[in-house]
Image (cartoon, rainbow, N blue to C red; front, side):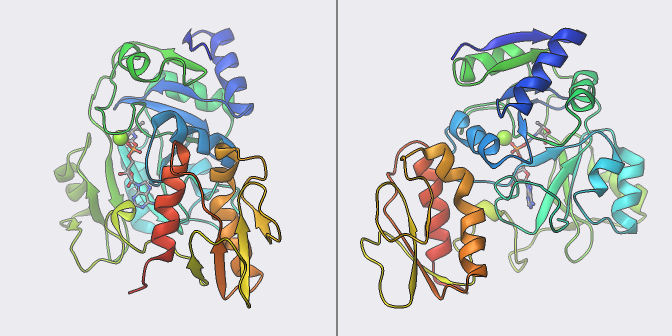
Length: 314
Ligand code: TXA
Ligand code: MG
């Protein structure tokens, strides 16, 4: 695939939005760092983010939205969250909020959690792209996994050329540091220091922020051994379906209740993963037996998540 460099002109913005509508990936500048954007409501598009980044696990992503109104279609805001949004959006602040049911958000974007990270970026290119696209754009920093966050289009291309459809180039990012992340479980909590100083947030709230502590249920969701787990028990590397089990298949396996991808397509398998675990739960599975998934490319992230789902529950 050839990665196009687009500029902030009406025809190029239109093309960028079209790529997103077709499930493609567009890196775009925000005031913090360049993000790697995909349609946040499309499992397949979000799966491609993880593939392009070479991420070995499915971390929850930030969904970028045009304004508070769009944000409220996807998450529940309490008074404190509303106050922060009113004070600091658009800007380098991400709010982690309870996800609305049936909001249309891809479960892969929130990594199967019942919360979603939302942010209204201030950068003109990000705002114009969001307006042209008309929906939420999921975007982690536009770097290969384990490398540093990009603050120019050249940084993005150095890591991702040939792996994404386009980069929208609008010069260097003014803040150059990722957004500050605030969660609300147990009170307003600093989840990640970032481009908006915590003192500014505290003076808006009129009280100190909490810090994450070891006793919090979800600190860094990607790091916990058993973080997203279905109600059913999970058995890995199944070659047969035992009595009372439901089989989540992969490839040409027979007798599967659901199949992540009959054609061995890893993007399809990643896109289906969380939704299928939910579905098998809803179908009343006591144990979900899962076929072996190749441990390469996106398969590493799929297996990481499945191992967590199969880990002993605390
Ligand atoms: O400035 C930024 O935030 C940039 C630009 C592109 O917006 N994005 C960014 O994304 O830094 P990323 O994926 O590199 O970092 C997102 C962080 C992760 O550490 C993730 O754990 C946290 O946000 N996060 C997202 N959703 C969450 C959730 N529902 N609960 C807890 N943490 C969440
Ligand atoms: Mg990052």
